[in-house]
Length: 142
Image 1 (tube, one colour):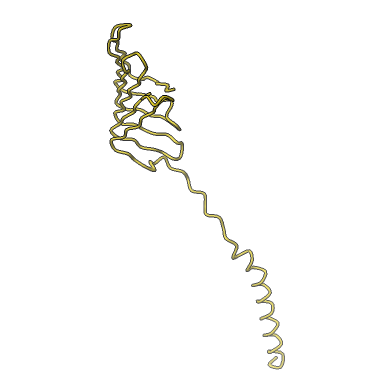
Image 2: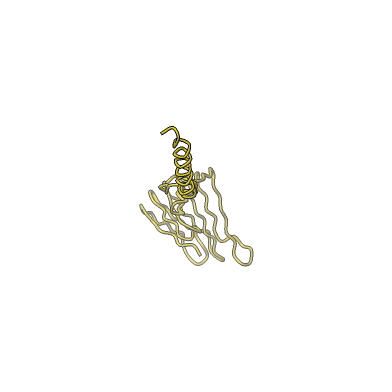
């Protein structure tokens, strides 16, 4: 037995080394990180938010203000706290829309106003002033 020990030790060493060479490539491959669940949490927040849009002639088209804007990357939505939208049209007084809350997605061309929505327009030469009150109103911007 002692006479065969060096040969047996060499054989076991070679087997262990062979097993290591077989395992090593698969064991060291970089594993992709586990799928993380996307959470509906804001990725940025803007306090006292103001955004303006101009037409082709450089005139103000509309202005959107909010006390707070929260953007959510998981579904590309924005939540607005106390949104205030002013829409400007040539030859007419501005249209003012206020609400408790609002939301929009993507580029913000479709705004859902919710809670105590009030849309007002001052008098014009072509007609009287007006006001619309609702609990929910969708505003489409052009």
